Length: 186
Picture 1: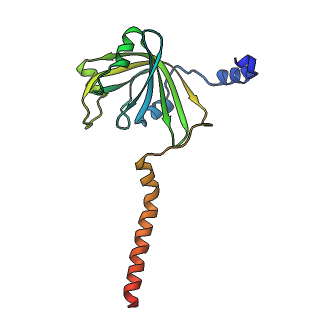
Picture 2: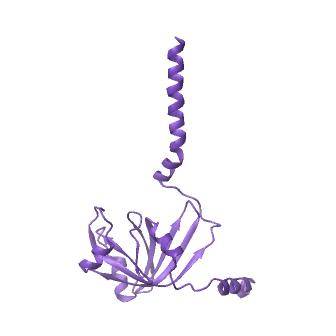
């Protein structure tokens, strides 16, 4: 399709300049560690894709070693669709979003689940109250950074609070000052 649309030459140059896209670098690992959610796609036995949102505290998706990442799978709605899909087809795709900075990392890999206590304990965030059922371990085979053109910036409540707190503090100080001035005018 790229050749038919006239864009193949540009993408061939980008691919040649990109370097390896199958070895996680500090850039990818830092991005992964800063996420508090992602979307994971798996494939059903009849070939249909299934996408599920996964969330937890910042850093719950962790680098284990080499090109392996993983996360603790918390007790949820008990459908077990992603876990069941991996039995028949271990391929997954992850979308990790940074909405405020308009960045997106796509990861593809082979995943399996483990109910081993050591795997679960290694991936369970310290002090997080959710009950883990298993660990998902993903061997990354490729990744791709996408352009920000159509990523709409979105902000968490904490990010909005941090950005607006100096203004809230200034308003409170001005109100205090006005009350003081009004008190001396009487």
